Every structure is written in structure tokens, then in C-alpha cells.
Length: 247
Image (tube, rainbow, N blue to C red):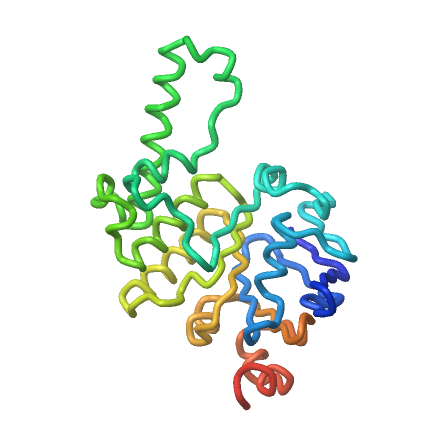
């Protein structure tokens, strides 16, 4: 589904990503791990078009998306969350959801057709409520985003990325900073996303979470992928142990 080939990116003299390569199969949950500074978030930014690579290619569904802008990549079916939560804090949970749902561009020419606009608004509210129920935030629909707990804000961000109807979801540290109850909830949500046909690539430092939820794991160090395999294989890999797990 996604293929990264020889991806490289430098900032000044710092090589953030060096000749990185990996593939993501459709319907899988894949973890991207590595110490701070390994290049994980840079890889996410390259895949989603927020950065342009110095070298290499990114292939999504056999289409080269390497130099596409972020909005075009999103339209092709790649959605992402960010390490730092990006919500509209002074808007309600429902309003945050409605802003995430893509609008029908054809309505621009018929903005005065009240029935058409009202119909789309009704459908968007129904879709938003369905997604909020999926993540367990339907009872918080009228709450301001800033009044949610940190974990609930993470759930809202996941719901917002699901609103894009993306097939490939890039989740940046979905488990960080949440309590054990929400951790289990997020793990269940990610598994349910896969059941609904989504493919997930996630960055995470919580190794227990990664090893329990992921089908495959990519390990990075100093901008390079140093290992790829099942969680059990990664746990036994000497390069990974030396670089990240403290073995």
C-alpha cells in the first residue's frame, strides 16, 4: 500500500533521514520506533508532504506522491495526527468534528440552495456523531475541546482524522501521556480501525503498547531503518536492543 524508497532529508549538516526504505501492507498495524532524534517524525512529515525529501520516493497505491502538497496527499487517502494535539480549544467537540469533515466543493456554486446546504450539514452532523460514538466521546458533544482531559483530546484528534475517510492513518504517539484505562481504549480503537479496513502506521515510545498491538515493527536509529519484523523479532534484534531498548 505504501512504499518508501531511499528517502533522505538533511537540515543543514544534520542528516535526519538517511536512505530510509520500508513497505506497509494494506490492513496492517505497523509501529515505527526509535530513540529521540531517530527521524521518525521527519519520516511522517515527508510521507504527508509537510517536508520535501532531498532524495528518494514515496509510493502510495502505486502512485508517486513524493512532491505532492499535503492537501493533495490527504485527498488520496492518507490522514495523520500530530505529536502535539491540534484542536480548536474554544470550539465544542462537535464543532471540531464538523471542521474536520471535507466539504462538498460543488456546493460552492449552489450556496443559495438552502435545501442542498442543509442536507449536507445534516449528513455531516450524523457522520460526526457516528465517529464520536466510535471513540466514546458522544456524551461530550457540547463540551469545549479545551475542557476535555488530555486523553479525551487524543480521542477527539483520532475521530477528526477518521472524518477524512483516509485509508492509511499515520498516528504520532497515540498512547503517550494517557492513563491505563484510556491506553486500553486507544488500543481497542486502533484494532477496530483495522477491522473497518484501515491501515495504520504509528510512532510510539510505549514499547509494551507497540508489541501488543502491532503486526510489524520498523526500528530506526540515526535516520536509518535498522530492523523490520514482527514484535517478537524486534525484541530479540541486537541492533534494536543496543539502539533503543537498552539491551
